[in-house]
Image 1 (cartoon, rainbow, N blue to C red):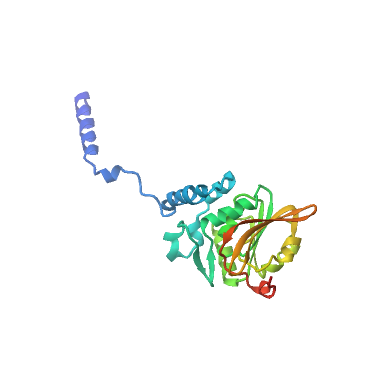
Image 2: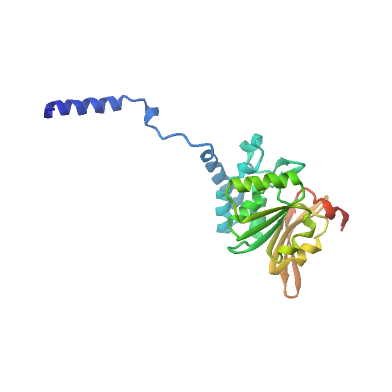
Length: 246
């Protein structure tokens, strides 16, 4: 091919490329999973950071965990909205801010062993698992426990152990725990949970019936220190807790 013919061929090729539809040159559309990322980022910025949660590890976990995978498929469009959602069996997944607040108040750190009472769909467990070493979680509703374990396996969480049972008694065989997070409200704090805290450990728990408050109870060398955080509204703790009125 002569230099003149080569130049004409290059010009024709450039013209042909220039005539391609713009859609052919555009970036591929985001995948279904990628489409949730901006919603998750906005959730953290507006609902969580905007309300004062500051722990960098908690914020990073909330940005990473795919909340939409922990709600029924029909509700995934609402997964990052500022409210709880039903997950079946009369239970709910907590509002994102409450999950972040309870996680921050547990003071999670790498290597910690944390007990969660009330697995639900396992969203709170997944958030904790992004930060701590081991999460032991108990769910009283068998179908929710099985579903939670399945979701965690699918997402690759290997540091969460799911048990079906009554969380009122905790897991004495795995105690002591550096933190305990409870996601259903008893009318009074279950004594076994206090007993299973490690020295310096923190119990984060909603307590009450018609009126509830989120409490943080810290085990000290002299006993327990109790702090009220905010008014909350959780589903009641069932099972043995129902036989322990205040």
